[in-house]
Amino acid sequence: MDIKTVGVVGAGMMGSEIALVFALAGADVVLADKGAEALERARSKLAGVLEKGVAKGAYDQAAADETLARLTFTEDLQTFADRDLVIEAVFEDEGVKADLYRRLEPVLPADCLIASNTSSISISVLASHWPEARRARFMGLHFFSPVSRMKLVEVIPGFDTDPEALARARAACEAAGKVAVPVKDVVGFAVNRLLMAFFIEANKLVEEGVATPEDIDTACRLGLGHPVGPFKLLDEVSNPLALQVMEILHEAYGPRFQPPLLMKQMVGAGRHGRKAGRGWYDYREES
Ligand SMILES: NC(=O)c1ccc[n+]([C@@H]2O[C@H](COP(=O)([O-])OP(=O)(O)OC[C@H]3O[C@@H](n4cnc5c(N)ncnc54)[C@H](O)[C@@H]3O)[C@@H](O)[C@H]2O)c1
Image (tube, rainbow, N blue to C red; front, top):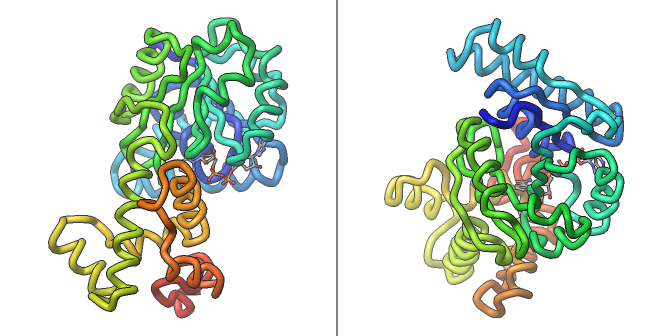
């Protein structure tokens, strides 16, 4: 891998595992967050993922130990001064991201590749928060959850992204075991547009009484070869997050992404999904 040093900001659900996949591929990785608690949570989560990897025979204990040793957990952005590639995975809020970019800018090397893992904010809009000179090396790298298992990364250029910078970032993702698909900078990129259309149609089938959520999930697993059906997946993603994405797509593309009434009722009723104990399925026995 031509990229030897990687920095990830945001040690939450996405950032922690993005850091892990690059460390597994042999890069020296710094993972930053704004609180010691978030960093400790990330460290113990990643130790758990590595433990599972060893148990499954994906790598041996020595490789897992070396991977953990290649990861530095820090609150100090000054440690980003020698990074080849920096990936931002902080909250999905343009203001929060812009503020972080302002603090990173004086620290990063001039030729550093910079990416955002945003799901819904335009890459060209985010690029505007960097000085002109940085915009050629700024792009979207949209990973999927859980990053340690999902192989896809959508690679998204902004207006000013240099194709050579995009190709280098893409190669780094591929060296880390990902499969990159280039996608234009449109709302929802490609996969979330497809997924939300699928969720909306599944809701309509239930609203119309065509089939139950359980039967639709069975049909999609056995008829389409999906590993889980749309309602099980909604419970994993969380219904409020899916509804929020539908609303963003509705605003961008109009009626074809209008959130179904049933989704709104589910969210309003607190049936948020697996973590909440109830969603389309009942998980209360599990907790
Ligand atoms: N959750 C998903 O399935 C998913 C999928 C693809 C992309 N994304 C995108 O990835 C990004 C992160 O999402 P997530 O689900 O991991 O969120 P998360 O809430 O789990 O994690 C965000 C982390 O960023 C940290 N953070 C916030 N502001 C910070 C700052 N200024 N400096 C340092 N750390 C800061 C928080 O403390 C938190 O640990 C978002 O842009 C989201 O849209 C999410």
